[in-house]
Image (tube, rainbow, N blue to C red; front, side, top):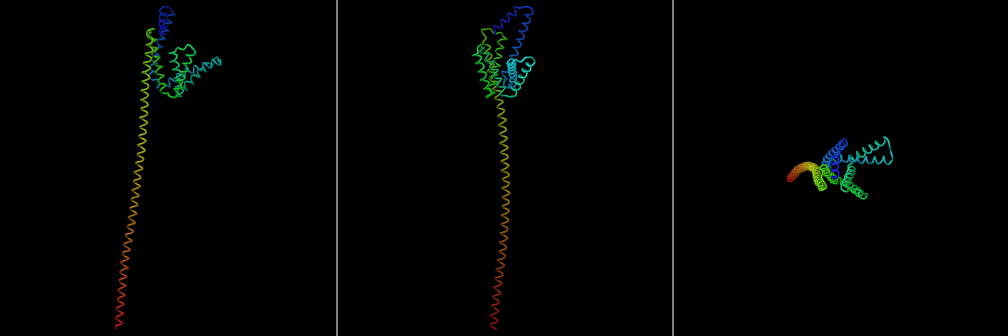
Length: 293
């Protein structure tokens, strides 16, 4: 890549006229493209998970375009139906990848891993192409199972590699220090993955804090309800105690009245018996006196 860049510069210097102007414009376009790739790569490297739906929609656009093109070429469609079919596939895949989280993660990870493998291996044989496809498919399946972790790692590596290679091409590193591009890629990838995991852990920590707060509020609410039930139960017990004590007082009062009544009746009965005995004695005295007379 670096040799090609230097050869291009040498060719530009050796040409004159309209051709040199055209190639110079192309060179400026390439430089602008590399700068854009650096900016986009940094954003993806550090904010890949946060931008997952946007990146998934972009991946859906790419896959939709490829599928639409394959359908058009496979069936042999011509005319105005070609752009309609391709555009339909692009829109459908983009919307599906943006809405369905796991599908978006699958497509996003598959394309990124395929691109990373292609950039590292430069597959020129079917075996290397198969290895790249198998690695991409494996990581895409893992993205369905562990979405956040896989997306963080892949976007960090992909963004770091894009930035490193773009810086290497933009600065014109020669064959002796070409490895500096990969060093930059590795360093940025590690930093990007670390930053994304830190942000995700804080997000999870906030969610756990909110959940624990809700649990504490629920427990507090249950304890308040239980305390209210206990208070109501104690009030019911107090009412029952008051009712039972009132009943006991009424019963005791009735018993006391009965005792007083029985006592009065006994006294009256005793007085009646005493009067009866006196009357009997008086009658006996009268009888004795009458007999004496």
